[in-house]
Length: 229
Image 1: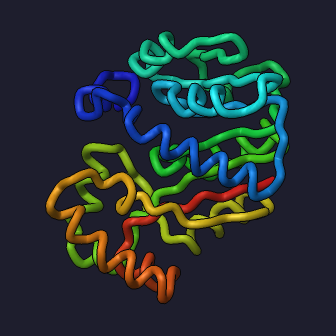
Image 2 (image 1 turned 30 degrees about the vertical axis):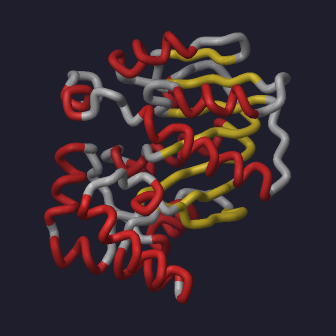
Image 3 (image 1 turned 90 degrees about the vertical axis):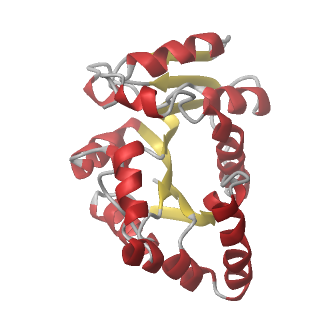
């Protein structure tokens, strides 16, 4: 899907418009945990805009590396090349070099990967800290309605679906130590101006203020940002 052009046909921007928001969530995690990396790598960097945003907002001594297997996404990366910001049309996990980074970003990636346990085990040795952003596609409302999950499978290529508890268990089972995590309001802050998205925002906001975990389990619309070692 990602190398054949099918994903590009359905997502021609490669979600560049969401990148400033995602970069802000990463910055929040870095600041919250007082992390001061010298090297940051993103595996599955897409069009490279998240790294470009971080490059413009973090200290000048940091070196950024983006790895992407899709030639179409890699083409989009080229306009974002800068000093200290490099992109590679390669699978980071297949590289024979002894590559190691202070922080590895895995932003909305492993829900796409058939054998995500093998992927996570191999990724673990590529950096001191890893930051994951994981869509929480499983909720009461998505299970009852069914079509949202099928739509994400068709248009976004999600082949695995998670709750907060399942996502954290997967990381722990793969050998990661959970350092910190928080919800991100994906559907509230990135849903655009559609009528359906607008109508769903109010109950999610109201319920979230009362009980975040229960809201995410029932109504969905959130993702999980996780910092691991």
